[in-house]
Amino acid sequence: MTSHLLRLRRAASWGLTTGFRLGLWLLLTSDFGRFNLIVGLALAVALPRARSRLASPSLLLRSLWAVLLSIPQAYAEAVSMMLRPHRVERLTSLGGSGSSSSLVVFLEVFRITLTPLTIALGRRPDGSYLVHELGRRRGG
Image 1 (cartoon, rainbow, N blue to C red):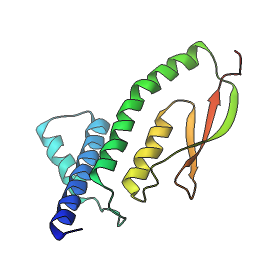
Image 2 (image 1 turned 90 degrees about the horizontal axis):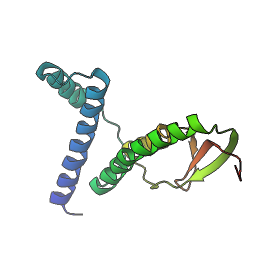
Image 3 (image 1 turned 120 degrees about the horizontal axis):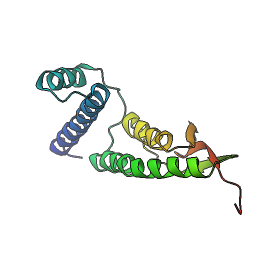
Image 4 (image 1 turned 60 degrees about the horizontal axis):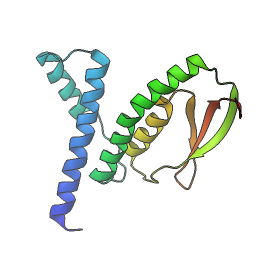
């Protein structure tokens, strides 16, 4: 990979990471005022960054998009759970991207855990996740 493309990829990854941190800050504080935005941006830039392999910006965007798409699904499953209780426990395997980027792994685990009735128990060597989930009985 050429030096220019590598710098562009690092800048894109840095921007996505900083934007994600700022977004979390704004969600946690529920304050979109100018001062809070400046504080959040300063924290997003100042927090230490993991020294892990750079993920491609397209993989980061796909992971973030999957998280955003799981939010309506989470609401639908929460309503379903209230209407029809889920009492059957099972362990399943859910595919992952196989990326070694800590941000991508975080987004994948966040997406799994955001969904009601599921929690990620661990990551397997092949990049998939061991997931504990609750479900309804078969046939009912």
